[in-house]
Image (tube, rainbow, N blue to C red; front, side):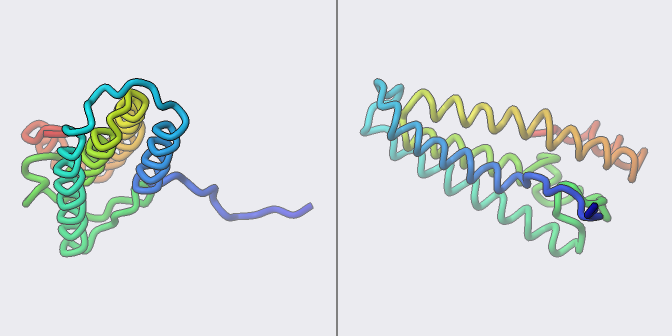
Length: 154
């Protein structure tokens, strides 16, 4: 019998975002129902995509400068509370959510908006909830004070 000590791979948030956007494209191609947003207005989706990507990258850069762990499933090493994290406890997730809504807007389809909402719900209920439990366990009162003073999303 062969056994492995390797832990199972976990779905990282950026990978989930890529999967959701691919599903949006597939839904747009295969479910060409009436659009919920007319074509001339869909280009406005570029704005939340660009803003979302910029916010996520800037927050990622803050983690790099703080020399802290970025991997969702790894042990947190530092509590980052300044910069973008002063306004949102989860600016990377906020950025990814904005990007998902932007892609849905570019598509204009109801299915794409439902997928964007599903992405945000999964991030909120699975990833963020998991991370918050770990941050509370690791940083205790410091994290509790931060959570009381800073909103989860905005």
